[in-house]
Amino acid sequence: MNTYNRCPMPSAHKRLMDCHAMWHAMANSYMEPETFRMHLNSLIQGLRNVTFLLQKQKSELPDFTNWYSEFQDQAKSDPTMRWVVASRNRVVKESDLELLSEVKVRWVADWANKQERTFTFPPRMPSKAILASLLSTPSEKRKGVVTVSRRWVDRALPEQELLNATRKAFIRLCGLLSRAHDACGIGSCGLADRDPECVNGILTADPLSCMDINPGSLQDHFDLSAMRGIGEIYTKVPYDEAKTAKARKRYGVSDFPPGDPIELAPLVMDHARKVLSRDKHHINVVWLFRGNEVIENFAQTYADQNAKYLAFHRLADRVETLRADGILLIAEMWYVTDHKQDDKGNIIPARDRGRDRREALHVLSATREGEAVSLIAPFSRKLLGTIQLEETFTEGDVEHKSIGILSPILDRWREME
Image (cartoon, rainbow, N blue to C red; front, top):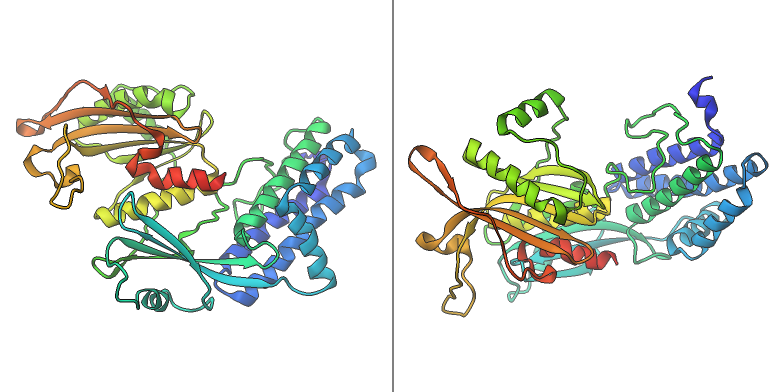
């Protein structure tokens, strides 16, 4: 039998796939107000039609009343799902949604100092003009990084940006159809893939990595100290099993067992020590977790400290997009054994300490539940570049709420509550 025919609810399932494609069309037209409005209207109707089409098949679906009633009860208590129902009625029977264009401005001076404010500007107003307007007050500080983010909201759901709201509804419906497939004894029905290539018949209750609710295309970043823009470059490297096997042999390591970022930190440090000894350096690596599963990993580079501030705030955006609940970082860092203050009483960062600073390998892990661990392995470079590593130690009294470099991620987790 053709796998396509095995789907117990092909009309509803295909309509959900339509919604996935429509979501991307809407996201791609974010800066074109009329096109965005058109795709939003279509998406809202598509989301609502998934449940209509499912209800038409209720007599053919096992135990329909029980699992669908459970979904309805959950949807009634969900502001996003109530908004979808009301919005579909408005679009079909009354008028377009009342869209509001907003600009969110984030100013970051350092790890401890951040401000966010929301303004209303015309959707096509250039970011430089927005920045000039915001900095027109002489007292405004000229330090750190400013990020200008554009966002559409509906007047009936002002607390949620529309990419985020519609993605939430899509995820909720994925869960519903997944439950329906399970009731029919079919885990995967193999509907044909579509364009864009990420649109397929897979049903998951977790956020899809392709549905980025904080895309870089909707943000502009400015270095206030240098008064210039900061650009983002993202390069995707496909997985290559042959290269992975070669790396295992080079460093004498094996794959990591399942575990959360706290459990894996010592194993990752052992691995990182071997890489540093062999290669004489270690790149900055980020692992994002959901439970005991690594859902994304990548390397980060930054030209200077302001770019580093920006990189970690963009990392917080990615944590929110993927609903990651754990993070693990591997990096080289400057390390000191004491604290010194400048003439204003501020602690001098290790990077600015000069000759009394040392190099160290650092593995830092944290979870949304409040756990944190910081492992440090000091090292020195000998003649001919040889690395002399000291014993790894655990940094004492690491408080989840006070980890400077991870503060953007910790703040975002609190906001996500």
